Length: 260
Image (tube, rainbow, N blue to C red; front, side, top):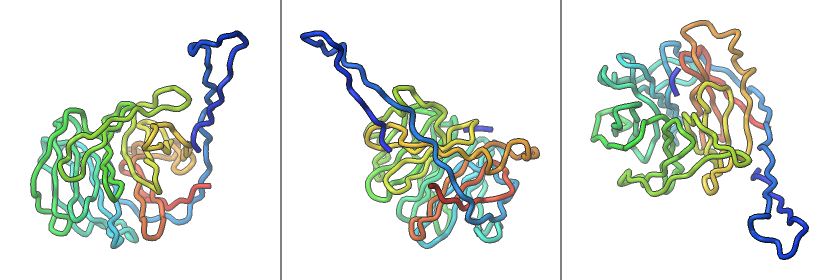
């Protein structure tokens, strides 16, 4: 946060009768996928990116973090310039961002408080609360929001009431995957940055299994990052064009990628 399907084989041991306890599930790690950079764009190096989301009309919105630096922004993707911005009150560390209809939902890290804004005016309409930390949030476009709190558990929220409807543990081959951070819904999957890594998990929203990994360690290598550039964090999907964009906290570039 701060700074496909799993193949399952079942083997019956040679004894009769074979009790249930002797059924052994053979799980394989999820595959690691390669990627290709299609284009790069400037990114504001003052932006400690926590959330990134596209609207259906092509507008790009960004939530930035840190106490005293947190903002909500509308960004020109071609130039990286901020077209519209409001400052979040200095006591809050802003986090993930989602768009539901004409409302932007922004999380805060430890205050267990979210803000709902009119996406055109950035006027705050109301707040909502939750019981965990707030890390990432994304909308499937129809019926569910999904939220991360830095653990291996995702919470699903009703987009109208914002009440939790279910939780889902994320795992790979039976092993929990924690530090789930910024989220995006992409073509029926949940994509999640894993904090302090350069990897994205492609997660089944039905089972919580990691379908695949995307290793982006060569996208902006750590050896080339000059302070204050921090970790990768920021996934945006332009559904109209099926384009995927990636950036990081105070990174100088936004990358458009494809995944093989």
